[in-house]
Image (cartoon, rainbow, N blue to C red):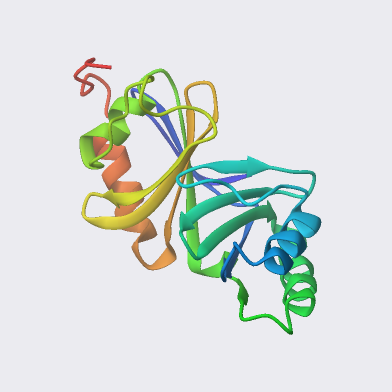
Length: 181
């Protein structure tokens, strides 16, 4: 479900429906890794990677942080259940769904739109499915990953969501892609 859409060189949607849970801890601790894998049906991802399971996607955000992306209606229950599973461990589990904005970029030029503002090699040889980048776009913190062919999902703080949407609309204007990638 989209609440805002821009059609230009690519389609940019402000997307709703994702639930997001931040998980902090030492993922080399077998109890934390096992509990996380059991709840989401996916193992702890490697650096700058994502894993997809039955319940959702786990994304590497830093050596001690994962972002679980799940259906919005399931975020509260999954966060509470995982927090209960990890109550004896040194870990933090927080539903951050309301603190994030999500955008979906669709089209053959999506890589080029992201390359305009993120210091990331967006060539297909350097960035592909199963990878995530936590970076900056237009000087604000964000993370993005491929969610399909010529499709990327981007997450940022809700407080800068309007800025990011406006930035993406400018970067995705018809005739504005340099066609390097």
